[in-house]
Structure formats: structure tokens, C-alpha cells
Amino acid sequence: MASTRKPRTAPAGTVIDAPASAVSAATNIPPASAIPAIAPPRVGEQIQRLRTERKMTLDDLSRAAGVSKSMLSEIERDKANPTIAVAWRLTNALGVKLDSLFAAPKAPEAIAVAGPHDIPTLHGHDAGYQLRVWGPIELAGHFEWYELTLKPGGALVSAAHEPGTREHLTVLQGSIEVEAAGATQRLKAADTARYIADQAHAIRNAGKGEARALLVVIHG
Image 1 (cartoon, rainbow, N blue to C red):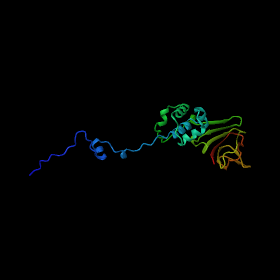
Image 2 (cartoon, rainbow, N blue to C red; image 1 turned 45 degrees about the horizontal axis):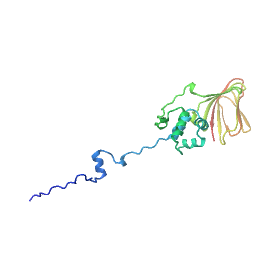
Image 3 (cartoon, one colour; image 1 turned 45 degrees about the vertical axis):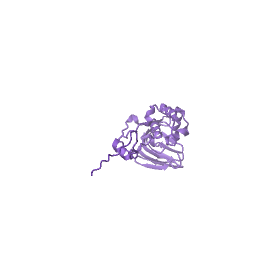
Image 4 (tube, rainbow, N blue to C red; image 1 turned 60 degrees about the vertical axis):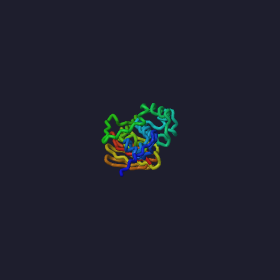
């Protein structure tokens, strides 16, 4: 004989404890474990990039923003998170909006081209030299290269750099004399001198015409 028993239904107002997977499937909401974690923005890295692009030192930005140099250093290394007030002072000093700190950095260009007017030039008018800074600013203090032009009688005289620093000088035109570590060498076009630069050293035009050279500095 067929059963006449009716299916049991929950009383009105009863909450049915369904598995989370069933709820997710019914509502099309992915479980929390399936949602990818979003990394927080690297605010310190953004501040350092903006400062470097503006050729500002830590001291420059510290003074302009009224933030201590030690605090700024920790922020740039992502060792400390700035408050909104500090972040505002930093972005104001950098000339950008506050929300730029949280924007995703732009992908670097495959080929970045710097025109003649983009290359910084240092003049030693009294000493008779000109230095064109070919290396990118972000490598300053680590690896630098310059085009050095010396007028007749001109000289680039330098104090000692950091311990372990070396310089490499290739003469492109004229005759140049290099003094380093108590020694002197005279170079002609296409000669290259490699010497220690953590002592006082000098590069002099030894000829009667203009001299040019490629100067590479590798800091210790």
C-alpha cells in the first residue's frame, strides 16, 4: 500500500543551516578562500621614486616636507607607514596629489630616449672643464659615467671618494694627464686609465687643444 505520509517542512521562521558551499553555489558568491588577496600599495617605494625623479635628496625632501630624515628613510624602505598628515606633507612637497601614492606605477618604457636637453651638464668655469652626466640619476652614488671636456690648461681635481671607488678614463680626443695615488700617467686618444679614486686625484689637459674623455666612476 502506498505511503500517505507527507514530507516534513520546517516551521515558519526556522533558519536552515545549509553548508557554505551550497549557499555560495545558490547565490553565485565565491567562497572567501577563492578571492585573491590584494597586496597593499608600496607607499614608501612610490615616495622614493617621486623624490628620485625630481632629483631631490633625502635632506631636500625632509626639509621641504617638515618630516625628519630618519622617519623619511624608514617610510621609503617600507619600515614605517606614514599617517595621512605626513603623507599629505610629503606629496605637497613633491608637487603631486595624495592619491598618486596609491596609484599603480606605470610600466617602464621599452626604450626610453633622452634628448640633448635632458642631459645635465656641470661646468667648472674657473677650472676649464665641462661634465655631461650620461648616467641615469637613479644610479648616482653607485655607477656613474660622464663625458669630460677640458679646455687647454683645464683640470678636474677631485677629493677622495668612498673607500673602494675606482675610475676608468678613456681619452676620445687630445692628450690627458691622470694623477692618482702619487703616480702620474699621460694618455693619448684611445688610451684608457684605470685607477683608485678613494684618494685625491686629478685629470688634466696635457695638450694645447681641447681634450675629451669618457669617465666612468664605480663607487665602493
